[in-house]
Length: 329
Image 1 (tube, rainbow, N blue to C red):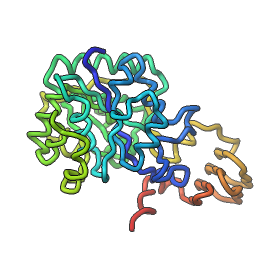
Image 2: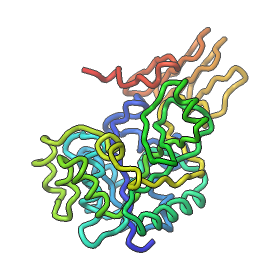
Image 3: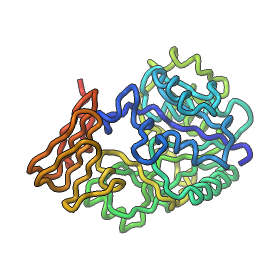
């Protein structure tokens, strides 16, 4: 697509898939959901929409080398490392700054750790959304039609563009009945629209989005930046006429926790998922993964046990959304 730049946000720390994922090799480098890593899949599905030279990666300083090795077709200068985590607000602003140094291209933001099963439908949706963004002063959001009242995803009202964060079960059901869509975290707009949105609603981040911004300035700028998501910093404040929602139906999934193994891996007659050297006796609905020491489980239900050379996880399935508790200091 003419004048289209794609920015992939890849600064995750890998906490939700520890110990398979670590800060040194976080979730986006995992190849468990297909033969390619998640970040490789993110780039591959953009093929036909954008040339490799127009793809940019915003990651952490510590992951620049690994990202370049994983994606050798992306120019090394397009892989930008943040000196510290400041959430997606700063990452999106930095992406605008590095991808739109000249002109006013349409810039699309994508995650490095999601699944898409229907790539032609994905390409058609993104092409349509980019066309809408090119012809309007709006931020275009991709909304996914829910197949269940999930509490794991944020939602967007397609009629108003209003964003709502991850709900409880009752509210998720009401959102589903009201026609809300899942927020896929994909945002597309002209660079000038993003810049104006940052200027109005997140001025503390707007310095990153300007064409004069250089990646070498990050060490100086980042320590004083607010730690805030793009949704909170910008999207929730945009007036109704400045947001357009384009529905997407292309087999999207966030694969946000080990619960995804139940969906993408075969289960035995008692609902267990097993990978590697595992022994399960009288177990139900559990996940056993061995990439290190063998895993043996006896008489348990709904547990997740993961063994790697770097660590062992034992968790109740119902607590997987709380994995970050394990990393608080």
